[in-house]
Image (cartoon, rainbow, N blue to C red; front, side):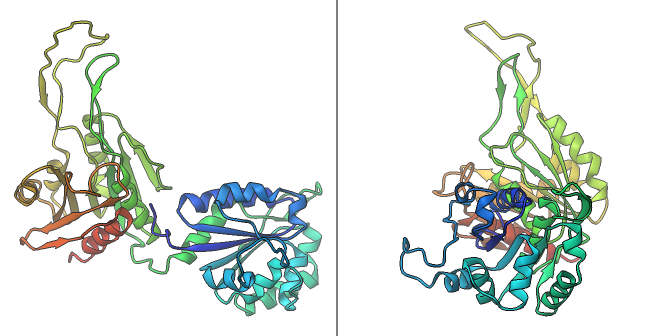
Length: 397
């Protein structure tokens, strides 16, 4: 689930010891659902096998311009046309010397020359090579040609020297790439509190009650906000999906835990999105040990209403709540909207095909305070997240 799902990055890998970091770059970008296609120089294959990148990306690795084992296509042109961004990491001095002079003598340099989109270069080499006037001149010329650089850092190099030339860490490179892929940074300076997943309430030492919430919708919302430059404080219960690289993640178990985590930060954010599915009830008297009785009767009591408590906060706080219903969708959701004092509610019918828990798609009806409604139709949760955030940011202060 990601705002980047339809993006493609070509990762060019040249022959340097920093090539191992390129594996982490692949993994990081793939987790964002970015399609990564790797093109390696032949020297790079001396450091790491192409199979490693093929396993990480699920795509064929390109090395040989004259390989005949393919469906007919002018491959270097085809790759250049499909990609949204071309990243060279690591970039050797040799590669940059070729690139600045238009030398296209292998698959990597040929594809790089054919690509007309955003080009990003992450150099990695010995300090002497990096500081050499020829390398610096080549980098300056490439920058004038539109290439962007992720400067190396100072550290211990493969040769044993200490100095500049160490390729930047994968996390830094990937965040740079995500910024370049996301044109719309309209949420910079905005802080969001987002809840996701389900809570669980203990019955005894081995049993609990919970629900089927996977956390997918909340994660999609968090990723949308992050992609657009916003700050995300994520409070998550039980989830079955990978969590995004949020600014702050607080993991909770029970509804009481989630209540405390939300109320601790609600005064410090601009908007709250209550996408979690906290249990409405908890066991009145918990059993410490496993219950052995064959005939069991359990008494429940109501949990704290997190959304209602947030709705009572006396400040200009924007809030979205969710309603998962199996019947009387509009009526039940409208009543909940009023009770929680939210700006709007996102209602979904759990009985509709392609909607509800543990799906990558959903069908929602967004109901505003004035009674107006928007029906999403069947869409991915990523797309629905975008609709929700757009509507939330359209509310006047």
